[in-house]
Image: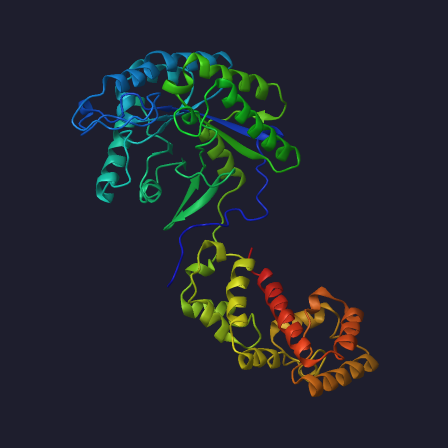
Length: 471
């Protein structure tokens, strides 16, 4: 099957009500990335020095060499930045989720003890803070397993959440396949958690952020002052808080690093933001595990039969009758590049309609002539498809008086004699009187106009049928 893996639909136009505890209008997830001691370094068995996310402009890896300046910047994060942030959050009794690189945690025992004493969640940030993009799948799987082992050895419990960051195309699948994680965060694709189906396993995903993130102090374009960081966080908060006030509560992740926002001039912007956010009612500061538990209890995953994953026989059996007696439309649609975006009424309607619109005039005419007359002989003989029967009944066309039935039958005869195909209208959009009015008006049109109108109505009927069975 020609299938496209990326999911552009997500929650769709009607995202669920988050229903945060206490009716909160926004959930703010504070994430502290702990990478100091897990970065690229010859001391760690790597082939070059680190070059990512520091205050060194234009930093590049030094193959075969240690980089004293880079190391000292990472050391600052552990020696000074962490403790400044620890005092900030514990002083305000704000819970934090730590993305802890496991090898870094092993080299920073006092900081780990302080995290645990504060009740912070320590999630896994992978075994090492290195780029995984070219890492062979088996090697990445082995590193994930070793990270689980070492994390439990260091903290007394396995991680319940995961974020690699510099991930590969395999990372999300490999972490989900462990079946050990309450949440994973290697995505940036939503403002709410969502479920991802990985084989038979339902994995909760809590999307993260690279923009409401102090990493922008070390990238271009980025933040220069703490005030710029505050402004961006405030604008994000205001937008999301307003949406929550309107009944569309969202999640706001904020990414932090010891060696970046832990600097005095940068942390001032974070402090101002926390003052601002804590000055509002209805603000929930959860750890990510708290979000995961809430979402699993409030929005448990419900699987449904996904059209994009159906084989041809099942797809045609399910959708072959959407266009009246025209299974060839579904057969052709199954050959399209379908994906998660087509697992909805609008998505499948798009695929089926494309095939109908690209059909020859003769094929389109065959679809039109497959439709029954309204309140005609097939209806009287109860020989309509179940869909047509329900549709005609919705407009009370199955309960006409003798005079009304005679009127419809005469109009049917006159319309077919003039245009060569039945009068077609999406009856569920109308009542008996408006159908009769449209019938009387449209019969006077030229055939080309009516052919176009009838085709549009066929597409509308198909959509209404799909809405009965798909989200």
